[in-house]
Image 1 (cartoon, rainbow, N blue to C red):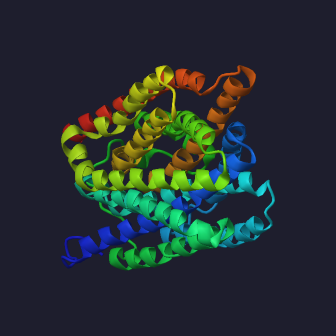
Image 2 (cartoon, rainbow, N blue to C red):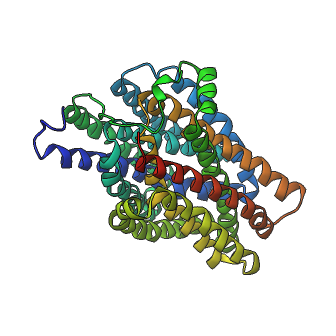
Image 3 (cartoon, rainbow, N blue to C red):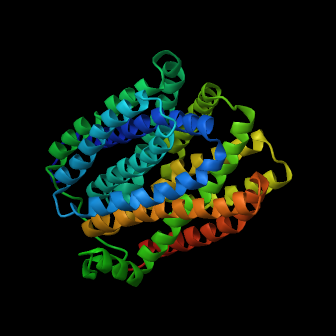
Length: 419
C-alpha cells in the first residue's frame, strides 16, 4: 500500500503491529532465558559457558547456511518459514526437557541463543524493509521499547509461573507466546500490500554490489566501508558482552548456587532492568537519535563497559557485576540497537535479507564462539577469575568504541551531505 495514498490509521497500525511482533518475540525468549541459565548453572556451573559459547557459534553458522538457501523466497514465505520452524522446535525441546537429562541444559542454552538471534534479526529485516530514513528514526525507538516491555513481561511470567508449572512447561508457555508473531506478520502484509519502503537515498550504491552467494557476499562486504564497519561493530557487540556475562554469571552463581534460587533472582533482575529500559526506549531513544546522533547511540555502550568494568577490577562483587550487566544490556537494547537498525535502512533489500543474515546471525554468533575460546584460555589455562576477565575486557571495549564512533560518524556525515 502506497504511504501517500493510505488512510491516516494505517501508519499507527503498522507501528502497533511491529511493536506487538517484537514484544511477543522477546517475551518468548525471556520466558526461557532465566530457565536455561538456571539449568546450566545448577548442572555445570560457569566453567561450561566458554564451551557453550563456542557451540553456539558453530551451530548458528549451520543455521545461517540453511537460511541462506531460502533467501530467494518472498519475504512472506521466508520469514513465515523461519517462524514455523521454530514453533516445531518448541514441541521437540519440551519433550526433551521432560526426560530430565543433564545434557538437555546445554542443548537448550545453545538453541535459545540461536532462537533469540534469528527471531530478532528476522523481525528487524522486516522493519528495515518497510521503513526507511526519517520514518525509521521516528519509529524505531518506540518500536524498540517493545523489546524491553516483552522482556519485562517474560521475566514476570517466569518468576510467577515457574514454581507452579515447572521448568519443562515453560517451554510450552514460551512457544504459545511466539505463535502470535504469525498474527502480527499477517496484519502487516495486508497493511503494506507486500511492498517495501521507497528509499530516496542510500549511503552507498549497494545496488552495484553482488550478493549472489557467500563468496560474492564476502567480496562485496569487504568493498563497502559501511558494511565492513557494520561487521566490526556487530562482532564486538557479541564479543564484549560475553565477557560481561561471564563476570555476572560467576557473581550470581557464587551468591545463588541453587537452580530455583538463581532462576528467581535472575528473573527479578530482568524484570526491573527491562522496566527501566522500556521507559527509556519509549521516551528517550528517538530524541537521542535525532539530536545526539547515531554515533552517540552506538558508542554509549562500550563507554559504560569501560567505566563500570574498570570499577569491578578494584571493587569486585555482586552489586558492581549487576550494574555492569544492567548498563551493558540495557543500553544495548535501548539505543544501540535502534541506531544500528537506522543504518541498515539506508541500504537495499539485498543487504537487508541476505547480507544482514550473515552479519547479524553468523558474525554475531561466531564472535560468541571466539569469545568462548578466549574465555576458556583465560579461565582454564591461565587461571584467571572474574577480575582477570574484566582486565582482558577493557581493551576490547575500547576497540568497540572506536568502531561504533567511526560507523556512526560516517553515517551522520553522509546523511547531512550531498547524495
